[in-house]
Image (cartoon, rainbow over all chains, first blue to last red; front, side, top):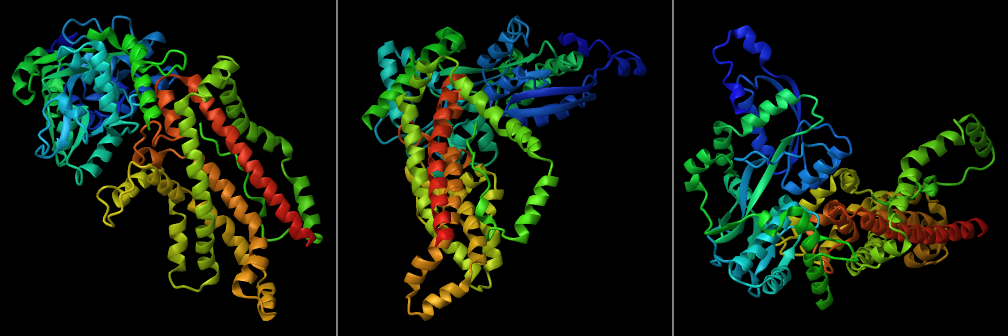
Length: 332
Length: 288
């Protein structure tokens, strides 16, 4: 698929103009990469494949976007915060069952890791997960029941404890301490950042759990923060796919292929995302410290299992995190 | 998902139509498109969506719905928003009347400006209100007033978004009020306070109750401004609307619908009480 772009280089001008995709691509994505897509679409429109393609873009909370597509929102290309939302589309036959089968990318367009965002200069010398459960530390992490990114954060903390040799019971009790120290649980990562920025001016013991890509973008935008990549953390994987009912599959595929090409992956890296293309990842590794113990959501059995086991809001069989929050309520 | 079911305030019209006016009114009704349009519109916009909400809440049967409503975290979130809304309604009914008084009775040069400012909470997206309140009354407050991430912030946000209801319900009635009665009371030796209590307040009461009802319904469903400033910590600062949003995002639609149903029922009950009180005042006015 990646070869289609180069096949026409020697062709006559009218022929290549005729075979280049055109029309509109409906891009439906989670909110975070919206500024990145502004850059990527502009670059795509400068390529042979992309010069005739226009875009209709929709950004919003990842889970809401997936629900909207199932409800009928037109979508040619979808990009979500986690594979959970791709599962929603898969259940409605809106993406192909083999969407994640590509051996190199596994269906992902960008990666990131969960990092510890701290006030600029890290005045409290936060380095490890253990630093977060100390009394007096103010943790900021969005509500895991409304924000997909908060679930990455919780699973990063949980998995880190396991990597540190703790038992599952100890890891769960760590989550309890972490959530006990949590002072703000906004509905989204973007709102949580606003709350953190408002607070860090006067409280130096603030730690905000966030995507590395978000932290890098916030620093590019001039906010006064630093971030620490902990030794143990989770690899965040953001899936992309062309839908099965795409109105413009040719242009949609061309766009996805472009996003996975070396130039686009370099651009993603510049914008703070970890590239999924190994060659670009190798070239940009100085910008992205490699955690000693990196794990994936697959190590917990994948999102379906994690959502059931940790985040189920069912009153009859609540998830581990649901129960922890409920128990915290009992003590207040 | 929101629960604003209040009808527009009927007593905003300064006084009931009588004599010729009433006859003209009845003639106009005959020529109006008729009750059909009203019924269809009301059904499409309000009744059918609410019916769907109710049936969603019952998908798993009554016991499941009841289990969701009595879920401790849900109860805590409803109780919190209920208490905060009632407190805000009391405060805004008093202070909203003060603002309306200022606009109607005082010839103050800045009245036009104040009048414009009063409507601002209507026009502003509530999330913007949240950001603004966070910067003014958050940790970096220029007034050194930090209410963010506490229950105080919920009161603050709700006061902000409901103020226009209180002011705008009272203002036209206050403007149309017959001042001769007040002057007569004063000339007969009644103190300012007695005049207000015995003459002005009874005339204002129906409008005050309308404003209070609207403000209460609005407060109960408020999401945007609270979601940013309150901190949303379960059992501490998480209100029902934020809880509902979380349940929807967690794909637990029956629980979200059950919580919304509970919130709707509470709203209807409270509004019925307001409406009952209002009718009593109107009847008393008419007979007195």
